[in-house]
Length: 268
Image (cartoon, rainbow, N blue to C red; front, side, top):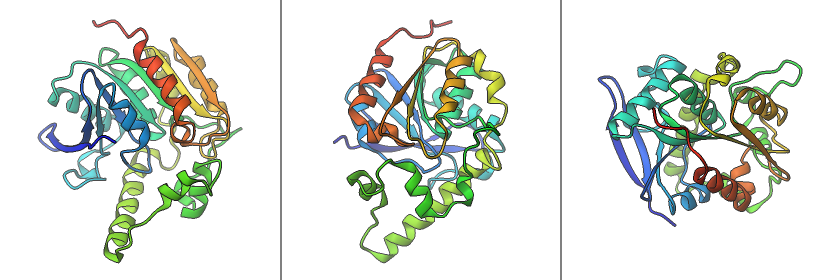
């Protein structure tokens, strides 16, 4: 397993962003979901092929403060600032869930910064005929059940594990609460911030990856993303829920690496 290192970048006068990084070669920006950032087997394999840069959402790590990010647009600009601080003109971007929404906004807002886009069960839409549940009103046990097809799998045990030390358990719980609080700034009361109107602006070749049994964001939303993004394809994997990249790890990695080796958005 790779040993990711933590870095802190002062991306503008107000904000510092912490990242986990591993690997080498072409840069790959990974934006995590509302559950927070963890270095998992998916990122670990990607780091064998790319320089993986995974920023913590502001408000979820020690160096940054969610109060310094006013809204979704501020967050998108902050991630452009992060690329600038890294000396990266454009990058391939992968986003999961809330991170997928942000990745789509980045690709739509400044088409020159995103070469290839991979959106894994992205948030950002809301359909009253097929509404997604309110994750901020769920009990932790219900939320956990919706993340995976098999809540008793080894993956579920790994995700739900806690340290033995009581103080460390408290730290984990505080971190989880802080992460959900930060995510709520961009997802609550509903995640629809107008992304549906901006999806047609995306020029980067796009892979949309979804689990057929997604218990958080209906798989039907994937077809909307596919239809509205001009150069997109949708891959739906069976026997997978919201953490499709972990539940169907080999298949998700194969699709991801194929997409990363495919044509990119031409540099301006």
